[in-house]
Image (tube, rainbow, N blue to C red; front, side, top):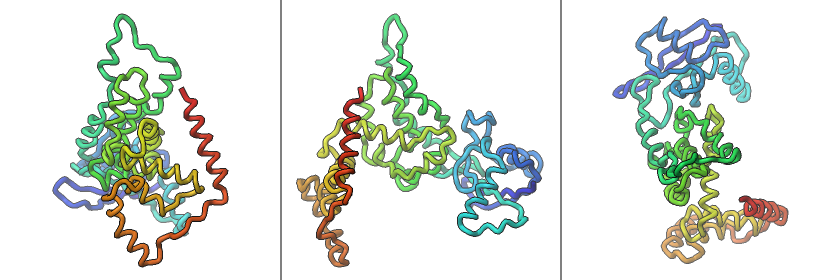
Length: 338
């Protein structure tokens, strides 16, 4: 089949531009093999990273039709079908004989060096910031190995599948708007350390990962990282596990992010959904104890009043008892865990 590849090309000092190449390829051909053919047969100046070609090293991560993926994993046929499905869902697919167009671009949230090659320095620095190594102190066990039960080892399997390809980091909305956020890749590795029975710094690590928007509370829970991860690590789920460990150890008065989560659960238990009249006062105003916090939301309250948006009453959900029962059941089960 004939396919057109639109490749976003640029250097660190030039604006991006689209360069098109047409190839006659087998539908099962991977995107990476197609790029190899473009480089070897049509344009030797094209730059991209590659190594193992077997979904192991993570080197060939790039944006393929708008989302980060491994070029060695995705093939032409699946990408064409994905675009057709999207077009059909938007009622814009005509089913004609036009040549399919695949767009290849560099990963996001990282500066471009050349073409599809990005500078991953910050990516690696953020990983280093969470110290993703078993602590030296924990390894000082004399005259025997540090044994783990099968269950303890199994708890590390999902996180251990991460190949640090950068796909989650590329598509992270939180990283795009908040440069201080360490990124989903780093926090997924951080959760591996929290779960590792051999590590002796769990409490210290949780304090570190609890650093407001730099740590786990910077995650906007958009699910992009889970969607694009080629190894099913589910970084957002791992971030959620760290949050749970922090919430188990913290009180609402300790910080606003902790209070935000605990107050939401508390209000939903009371009324089946969030009473917005109380939510801001309890979270930002710290249960009416933080005068400065209360004053900070005053202008918002005035604007809501003037526009008729302020809720003067609250009607509990009809399913409040069921919601409360479910929450209490989950909380009870969590307390029973070893």
